[in-house]
Image (cartoon, rainbow, N blue to C red):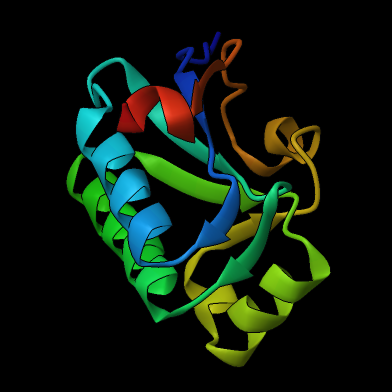
Length: 125
């Protein structure tokens, strides 16, 4: 008889522009995550309409932090503009990109517990 360990997930919700300011805010959010509690980090990109190099650096930094903490990081709901940037930079090859939050349970081997939502404004304040 087998069992599945339940892993808690956390949802990050950056908004508008993932540029120098938005990238710094996202990196602060990554640093604030309790990796012992949250093993699955999901970045909901549905409200992001622009990503520049600073935003890409923030995403790569988050991926490195998650891997060092033995956590899984994924992106969901990228807008067409964001998806294009991820494809052009081939970052979509390094990051798990999901079409919706509903895809999370089918994409991960372990079903995440209900997610806690962290909005950019709350963490950046």
